[in-house]
Image (tube, rainbow, N blue to C red; front, top):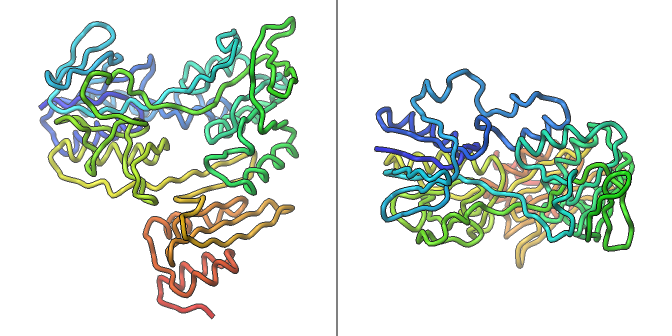
Length: 416
């Protein structure tokens, strides 16, 4: 049995190790498309900030880790898939046959239609090579423009601030992290950043980037020209599924998978940022591009490839963000559900916010800013679907009683 795992990020590495655990005799080939050992993209901001060396981004640090497990690591990229012949056609011209295939090719940065995007000094921040380029340019007081204040952009923001750059953030949405936080929370994060010396322009786009006498000049939709030595593009990512054209695999936002993470052709599975799998909160199938989901997918897909039928019950949409010391989080259906109820606690001056979303007496979504003690409770209540009973009405009026409600409900204690 030859298992091929295409993609050497967290999903791929966990899958390879899980397969070896369950099948001591199988041949396992892990294919990575970059000139680096398997690493975590989520560790790149720590490298940017100078908190870790480049080696600190690597997923495994023991010398010969993959060789010891009998996992062959191949540096190559897939150009096409022949699902009938069970063969991957690699970009270098070689063919790689498989018995079972896991596609964990992740995602790539979206390149917005900005004139001058290919100018020297303009970089995405997705690969280790991107990070090397940014580190070489981002020094203390260096003017930097960051395009995008979504989840990934805000993580990069934190790292750039740690480097001491003079930072301007440009976000086309009406608030920061618009796909993670509502208007109240997003505006709170913006005010916090501005108090920390970061200029944040929301409802604004970069329309053109030119080379000026002193470096780069980024023109905004408001008619302003921003001078910079470095422009970082963080405007979202898109699943890497282009090589599957003509393969017969059903795709949409990513690869459509069933309840066992299997694709629409035999013996092919998908995991991580490329898999359009079940969202625990909504029941819909979507791409949840976060590392915990990738790790979960990799483990479950590998178990199914090894013949251990393991259902994927759904992954929880969750994000936790540290923005220059202000912790924010969102879980599940944070924007609410049709016919649901909500409760909110807002302390604008203290940078504290808690929003709870209910479907019946179950908590299905939540947001928190500046309230780290609620992160684990929010996740636990949403994941378990615990019926809160009479505590629901108490929480709508007083969301700050969340921890009390969690403990009391688990013990069968009614509110007073």
